[in-house]
Image (cartoon, rainbow, N blue to C red; front, top):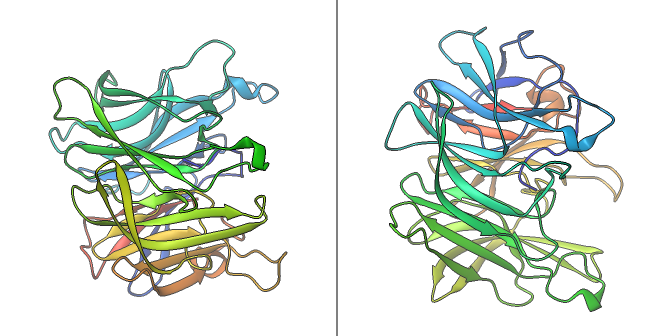
Length: 338
């Protein structure tokens, strides 16, 4: 699930000091209640950017409208919102131009459900003029798979490679909503012909729900559903793309540390910060946590209940993280939207 797909209450921004574990609310009282933040926020040139959405007609889910929400970290009350023409699913800093952002989007069509988009492009967006240029795509999702309501993840390596990963519904006769394999498309922005490569996990290996795009070796969280979707497994793995395959090696179990309901985390230094819902007592007691994991082992460094981490935000559904460059890792802080 690439971001928040349902209205969950008012959105807030927080700065969390990862040393003291103290969180400070940002832009308090300046974010209209109607805007819902999605995921893949980024801090570019001192401004936190994220995609938000709202329903002009609350009775019509097809009326969803997306915007670019921006918060200037140098001023605690400087919050702005700019409408976007199509459906957008993430924001990343452009390494080439400080006044531009990279975004993944799908085209809006009349009477279409923006939660069932299946054809995606990478665009560059000028933050001043709000003009967009398509850089790569399209990438078409597998049959019966969509973003942001299905499983998968989008990731950027910070240079010129985008990974678009999806689950694959390969055998409907089994009665599975999601089969236990996945596909990752790699878009190379430096390619002159717009071509891209495709890599697959093996049968019963699961599919990527968190990762950090990289040229060589990287990490990932693989999700696997079995017993007709009644058993969930999450594995933290080493991985690399080779010969059309996603080659993985399990490092640790991630069921109780990285069950983010498909929301991507952020890596600051050697630490992955993510939302985690599945640290529970009993099958029906779900908690809402922030998790910090070592990307070399997948092991938990710490976990915090959002009730304690984000004052006054009981049962906070955290939709995005971004590394704050004002406080470099390991003495770092992360920007959180919920």
